[in-house]
Length: 359
Image (cartoon, rainbow, N blue to C red; front, side, top):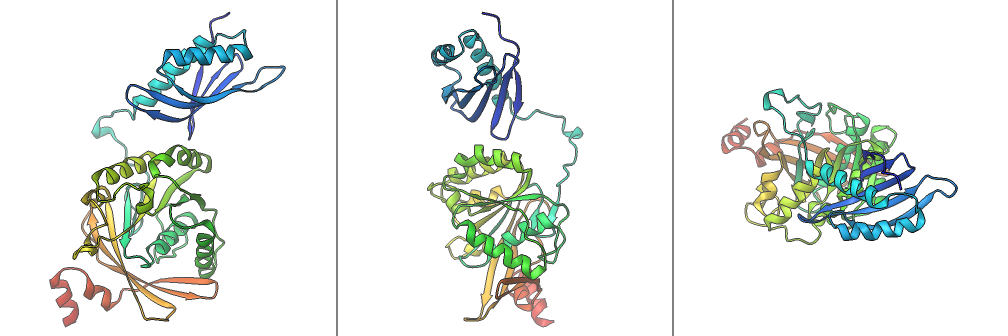
């Protein structure tokens, strides 16, 4: 039995592919690091004649020598002429090293400016850092988030602002369904006279940290550069939002997506709840820009006004409030910028509100 060749390891959205010139390829996916254990889902395929195909599939603890030996015995029954113990040892060592090496360190003065630095939709959405919209239920925050996604993918100034860059967008839906979002997107596009874009709709039914392996795979396959998460309440898989753990795990998961994100959240129920996202104060701390969304609508009217009030700024000063007027008609949703007196009166400092009233 010959010593196996050195494997070629390729990173994929889902994990890694490990290939040997002997005609064996292993997909290593859904990697989980438990400290003293590193587990992964392995799919072993043979490309060798006369019968190429899948040899074995399952979950393996890469660090357990006994487990590797058991896998080697099973694979040896299928392809007895290969050194399976040696190949699996190579796989475990190389994948463990890559999975745990993290991002490389660098001298701070040599770090290059990222292409998405700054605002993607000025002033509402940051390019590569996490942004959040929060407000009461039915405040149209999800609608505006979807409109922002359509704008980022098409370049259309749907919110009255041209995006600074174009990206393929993914909409991660934790609370509704695809048909509702499709209808909304087509109605927005009809009002703008543009073709509905190929936004990637991803229904999510587990906590976002459990969805990361498949999300990263989708993002790699579809060249996703920006994501909308709707909403963080359901994305935490039942963890109490008042706990720091929920906010911290959410932030860690979002960072693993490696794209800019816009998250939708509900407001705090306290007296000053229009200033804070519902739950732990860590929610407010983790986002780099946070906007409170307030809706005004006369009962039975198809027209609503929405105020966006800046509650958190890490990349600059707090910005002035902005407003939108949304009109619902048959098959169309029209969104227009509107800087109204009421928006200025309901936000900003006391000095600004007095000046506005006097004016």
